[in-house]
Image (cartoon, rainbow, N blue to C red; front, side, top):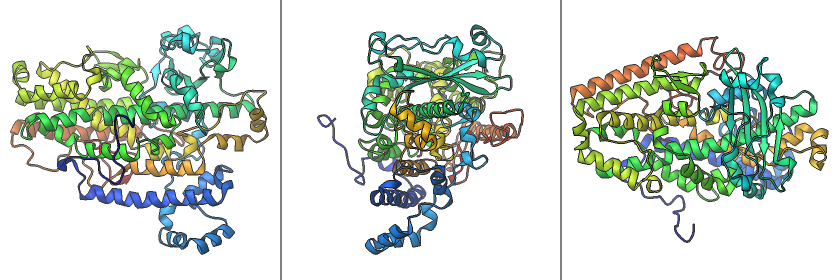
Length: 614
């Protein structure tokens, strides 16, 4: 808002206090990534500017060649550029390896895995964004938006659409037996669709996808609904339902519908679950900790590893990622409305009391409370890799926080009388989240149990939750057909001129609906950097400074925490070797390692740093 704020243009730094700046190892990793990014962005822009026919992918082989050969120019164009722009020769000669993109994990084991319905469904449980799947509890699904503006709230998916895919069950029986699940992006996208679809090269729907839980414990998609705001009272195209294909044309329509679901999913993942919930909403707690607690305060000592680099990485994000006309606006379907959508979600959806893993699983209907189970809840999909592995780490963090708090707060009064502690929490809520500070759901901070619970949630969000949402971005999303971050065409209906194009050349039509060459390579370059661990990464359970405290009780609790994290990693390895777990084992199926705590440097698709460091 030019009338209310100004921005500091990169590379001018946004102010970050000195003790939050990157250390040498982190700066080295980012410098190397910047060189790689420059080269990866320069060549596609050059190619598309001098060769307009190269702006779209002609075939899937063009996408594959990004990983096999890198970008290559036609010989005549190659020679012409060498004569006119000697810098091109220098790039080609000195950076062959940098111009070739790393092969994403998603196509290493099975080049065509992304085409399969079972893989599309599996990624809702074990992909980059496994936190939006929810149990369907009412059929048909119903919108919460104003029907006077957005039309009837009921979904257009009927029993006739799905009855043939319920293994002989009725819809009511499938609901009662917890067999139906949903990705619902209708309400978050619908208020923005008219504006998004008026942008050049942006086309989107509000989507709903229904899944059926099979006897083998996997999900299969059984219906996709694509919704637009109704233009008239009886606009038949406002809600279109697609079901698993039965002929050649419906196969391509189904693939386009899945691509739109993935585009919705990518936007919600990046703008809401990743940026909003783990980067932005944690920042007030970090700033308030520095302002209100002494560095010698025991709670500051506990939190310090989980605050490392976050303020600096958020400052950089505001300059080059989420800024106006930045990478996120350029790369994702909502375009210039990306941050407005993120703010809309904060206003309508974000609640700290539901950010902990158990509360979130119960809220989404993925689990029910069960005191007989190890974590106090029972998952309704037993092989839900994000949740099963996440609960291992959540429990380890909870026990660590409980033991640590018990060592310093022998009574509830000690919590209430701790002026620095209470000032920290008050400022984080009242000043850091002023729009929501009067909400009744804020966790209280009056007992030792309250404090341990609050710390568990904060540590979880800064470590395991962020890792699960971040470090799989390139390995699982670097192959753009698997998960396009934006779409450029709507799905044509019979009678449309574009429908004839789809029927005549479905392969080319499909690729033309996905991001262009430059959009693809720019996006790949960014998520390559975001998915990279630096050499100085500090992982969950690690404290490189052995002199962080001299208190025997705190040291003993920290040692037990580190040991429990190691045991969790061993259990994750066992699960990934168990063929009965079909959402993490099988032909072409990737193991789920995003919650495996340790990692080496680079892009590894695993590793849980202590804090939001990238």
